[in-house]
Image (tube, rainbow, N blue to C red; front, side):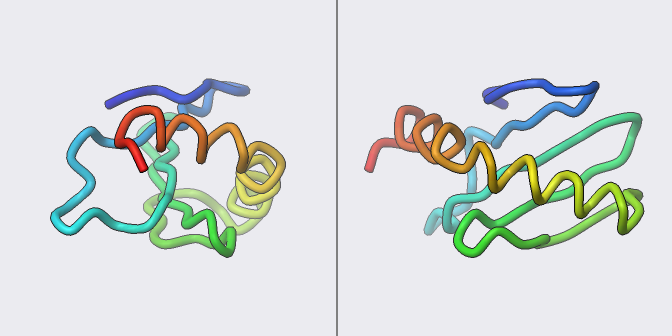
Length: 80
């Protein structure tokens, strides 16, 4: 599970096996037992387990602001 970055206790990462065929670019986020998955294009929640709406909005803003970094890490790990 390559970690892309950590921020305010949130861990932003993806799994090494993201399906076959591989799902579109996305990021998983965990903190305190809560989990979410965000698609990058467009930035939106794919699933959520435990985060409030307010937290999801905050996480969406972080994902959007760091979308290029997340995509770069995805391509470095999986290739094009």
